[in-house]
Amino acid sequence: MKASELLDQIHSTLLQRVSNSLARGTDAREAFGGELQQFFSSLERAMASGNPGWLDDVLVQWTSSPTLTELQQKKNNVAELLNKIIAITNDVAIEYLPEEDALDLLTTVTPIYTYALEKIAHLETEARVAYVSAELTKVQRKLERLDQSKSSFISIAAHELKTPLTLIEGYASMLRDIVAHDADPQADVLLTGVNLGIQRLRQIIDDLIDVSKIDNDLLSLNLQPTSLGKLLRLLRLGLEPVVSERHLELAVRDFPGSELWIYADSERLHQGFRNLLENAIKYTPDSGSIIVDGRTLPGFIEVTIADTGIGIAPENQTLIFRKYSQAEPSLHSSGRTKFKGGGPGLGLPITRGIIEAHGGTIWVESPGCDEVKCPGSTFHVLIPIRTEPQDPKLAKLFGRLQKEQSQPDAQEPPSANPPAA
Ligand code: ADP
Image 1 (cartoon, rainbow, N blue to C red):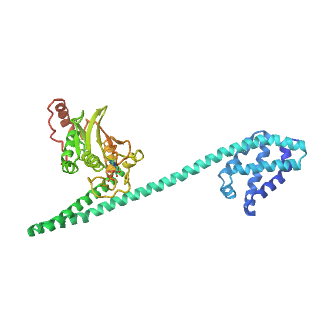
Image 2: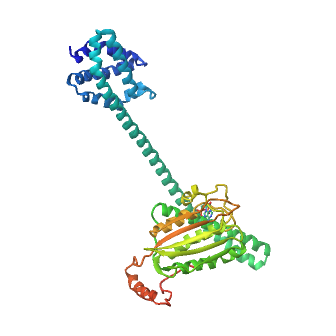
């Protein structure tokens, strides 16, 4: 007798035993009865034809069927169910068939069951990967939506805060005029405090608006002929009072490319480099040094800002360029230049946004963070050497600048408009 006919003989007993072995309520068993029936019919066909592929449909159905998922209560899987079916087939064949027939049946069915087990392992892995990646996509979408609404909220709140802040500024200025007449020195001190607070608040609001612009790709650049050397020296000059107050050395070296006129947004670069220098000042103890140097690379000018400060741990060297992240969360917002003054963690993300909007890049190198040994940090900034203006009207002017640039005593261009420090 053929093996498939032998299976047919024990078909109903097999079905009954497998169904009984499913440790679930009668309803669920009945619901699954049809699927088991289909399985054994396909198994018979596979045995008759010698093609185990007859089982594919039912196996695919099982691995994706929610009924089955319910039956297996998540802890069991289809492979476990199939192992149960294999064991029961062995038992029933031995119990109900003569020894030789049982051997025939099991010899034929074993390779088909092996195929089914392999197929299930493959399908289950695929289903699990698909499920996990769908869950990840869902979580990612949720996070993106959350980030978007956070960004919109911050942008709206920052814009809303600007109006009352302008009012406070106006009234404080009027008050200062009145107080000036009365010549009360104490009131003057108090008003200076109010003004400092206003300035700081304005800075934070402006930073929040910049961050939301960068988040939404709305940071527009006003490219004008810019000399990085001039810009950095201007910054050095503006920071002179705090540098001497903190007994720091802040040196801006002449480096190859520092006097090159390139198209860049000088105001935005000024803002970005100011953040870097203020950080260098903030995280370098008194009497330390900060050296600004650089070089030209193919297509880029590299500026480095090296300090002898507390340094940055390797695990934080990428993190600090993300919004609202500080290498040391315990820092509080106490000032822009005080040693370890802390802040809202917006400076570096804004600087990165500005540099990247130029087509450049920024990164930091530091042996680690150590407040006693002070290993220091070096920030690297690459700015593309852009010699073509965006605005064709500026092309004529820049042509002249390029000629002047090649002469030894190049003059400052009439259109270059470096910001005041
Ligand atoms: P903030 O200074 O407002 O906290 P930033 O975005 O400017 O925010 O800097 C993020 C963090 O990076 C800082 O809190 C600090 O931990 C770290 N950091 C930045 N620059 C330096 C530096 N030169 N030396 C050591 N740590 C730095």
